[in-house]
Length: 539
Image (cartoon, rainbow, N blue to C red; front, side, top):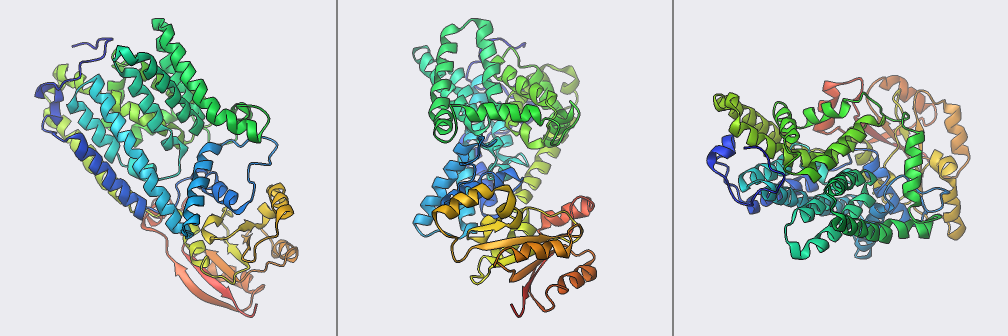
């Protein structure tokens, strides 16, 4: 059977079409329950953050706004991140604190739970799109993939716009696939609005809409294009246009700034060859199944042209652009699963090679599912960046703390997630240099609170004289020293003792299992970050 350009009828197929999954009789309700359970495990047990952006450009900004610190708002140019998404978290934090929920760990647990619930829409729409394009058997495979793919539960509860943008764009494609002629105009209007919602989270998702629009243009479906564009413009203007008009110079100022910034700084971040994202896809989706899915995807241009060309355009543009960070490709994975499963299952049904090698195919899928389920569960109990977060959670209970010194040995100094101190706090360089405008605006309106805390940093590249100069500028003097790592401890402690002769060890924080595994696999990149917290005596 060759693919038809028309949408396949919404009905189940024979067992032969299903192939190795012909006994997979899992209803959508059970798939959703599985997805819910593993995401709730991740929400409650997988603390920490995955990347810099999902904490410092979302949580930190939202908490700053709650403190009254106008981060981003008094900059001459718009931020390169979603103010809408940060604003949602500001609203959540405001509601939590208004009912007495102030503990930073508790607030983040609630945030992860809400993200986990929201991410169930990925599973739902992935299932429904597959069912509409193919059959229930393939939809079950896709639903289970979206529920249990090793990185999906873990990433789904993080504050990543690359994940948050997925439900609205999948819902947009679902509306575009509906065949109700009486409501077709309304469906495309809603699709445009949903593409716009994905866009204000992550600008790159516009490529999905452009790819789908190219198909409509080729088909000369002018009315559908008009409704799609109208829905997009209305929603995008209502959200992004309004935000930029209020805080910056003109509607969509953020979009213009983002485009020019990335054009000017294309080579200033992680770069790689044009095939890097292809390797990312092959690795993340577990070979050999990842190879099967890409082959299947390549066979669906006629069956689902809007999804196919939207996904392909997204992939090609990201592959050609120099800045290549693995998280950038995350929005594409659901489309690869949907179209990959549909195309591959049809290929297996007609390929003589696989008809005689069903055991090999079954072994491939068995390896895929066992590995994904084991790793997905393990990741759901992973505490990432524990060495950076847990010390600050511990110190958040010290009400008499004025400042803390973070000592990194010969490692590079890392930005501390000060949100977890549960009070208005600043790094010395942030307070004194990088965002001085924000602090000046804050102090012009009100004085610093009594529990304000300063953090100073020290490593092998920084002299004690430089640190002492910093300490002399402000009355906030360290009460605690946080020593990160175990290498060269004698030399480091002698250096610290030259400033603070009497230190009392209060507690030791061990790395999470995840961090220990990373250190074992690649000790040069992932350091052993046991943390010792000392109280400075006689201060």
